[in-house]
Length: 116
Image (cartoon, rainbow, N blue to C red):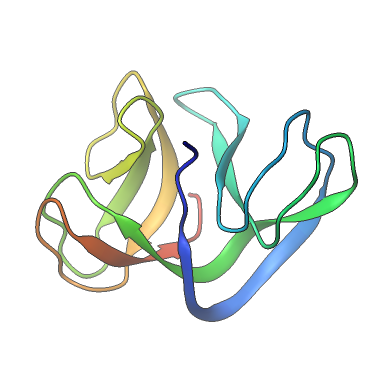
């Protein structure tokens, strides 16, 4: 089951995306996968496979499950294996943005989607 990020505010910057598979609104999509320069987008609405849709590149605040403790303003990463926000760069992580609140492990936290 794909992971869903719940939109909580902000003004996302979007671009067009034609996914190869069906995607749900709020799905975190790996756009490029390089541990030093990868990026993820977040779908803004359901998109049928091979149909033009939109994906947010940055700017929104989303409630996303976290796999660590995060302080307000801390850089956070998307772990492509556990499908959660983490606070350390690793082999399976991609820059996601910044913690928009202090949060504790295994809770949904507000994250500013702003890859760095």
